[in-house]
Amino acid sequence: MIPARIKPDRLLFGTAGIPLSCKVRDSVLGIARVKELELDAMELEFVRGVNMSLEKARDIRDENEMHKILLTAHAPYYVNLNSLEVQKIEDSIKRILDTARVAREAGAWSFTFHAGFYMKIDEDTVYKKIKKGISHVIEALEQDENDIWVRPETTGKSTQFGSYKELIKLSAEFDQVQPCIDFSHLHARSGGKVNTYEEFSDILHEVEKGLGKHALQNMHAHVSGIAYSDKGERNHLVLEQSDFNYPDLMRALKDYKACGVVVCESPNIEEDALLLKKTYESL
Image 1 (cartoon, rainbow, N blue to C red):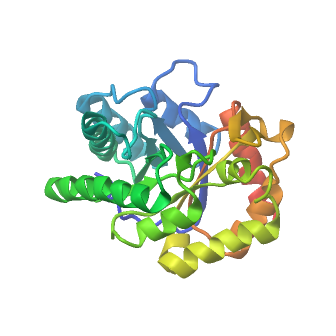
Image 2 (cartoon, one colour):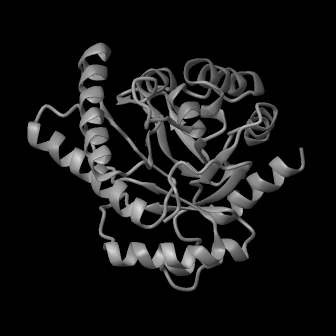
């Protein structure tokens, strides 16, 4: 099994899910296709539910012994650690843990999830409640001896918990937690800001200041084109059909010597992943 604390020695680029050009929608075949495309990573998408068996996860791990791409995972969207209903919080914790266990069995390095919604509750109370939920997750993973990176994700709407400052603060509370920085979400959340070299650099500086240089050396990031309104994210777009300034982001990541993985969530996942990689490598 691939150690979860493996340290990527460069910035890798991959797809959010099986490449669209893969002839059969199968994660095992997806790994081979990612390698054929000369990409470096693939995110296992459990956004509609963790319906992968441990046996299938082991097949993915075995296939990846040959190709050695970096695997990550995305937990179901149906997570809200700030729910007003205790059962929904318990169900959310279970979905996060199910993702962590299947992803780890597949040899994944990191997994991400959207932690919750504010529910019109003050931010300090929400923070404490979500921190409590994360602590239950970490306790269970420690009992399982599962050291996969746990990554709450920056979110695209102001109604959702997940500003980058909140996630830096939360990550500092746990050894096994680091943020998944979705730069496109931050662009949408800000109503079109967070889109210049200086703004991207400021975020990377804050990550390093709050969590140390190792956080930049083990980054899990998401990028896509994105449509938004004054309320935040609407939907993902192809990069060239959006106003997201990906060349400046690539330059900031290069200048900060970031290592880890950039997962592309554009609708044309492998084309934009290749565009990001080509742009980065041209710098």
